[in-house]
Length: 179
Image (cartoon, rainbow, N blue to C red; front, side):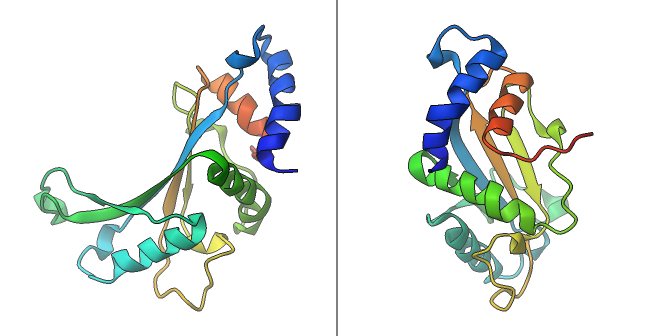
């Protein structure tokens, strides 16, 4: 059974009962997942952004867009309009497939993994996860990459607060640490 079917059949009633919601439409849901990777100190290397783009394409199955600097910052040697990263926005079935793969395959592959911290929620129930290495994803082969880069995953929800957001992600299978 896919993650979306699990959400509809078991997660929605459980959250509705846990949070004391009267209407099914009040139950929070995941609206989108954004993957973001900046190229940082490798900004001078021309082919590095292409490698990051290929990696994100393999991970998500969707072509990323390149992000550009909005204004120049001389201390970081960045000019306005210069490409400084790549990002992908996932919605719908592809988003649920990615979340299922993230929970069941990627998290167990992370080195020294003891659960994710629940401090990464913002005030509206959205959750941010940072990966220092992209090799935790099964699509990325160690032999094929020349430089390891990090990436950021933002899970955007309709939850109104941290409690509702954490409840949703816990029921979807996110392994929060017990601290």
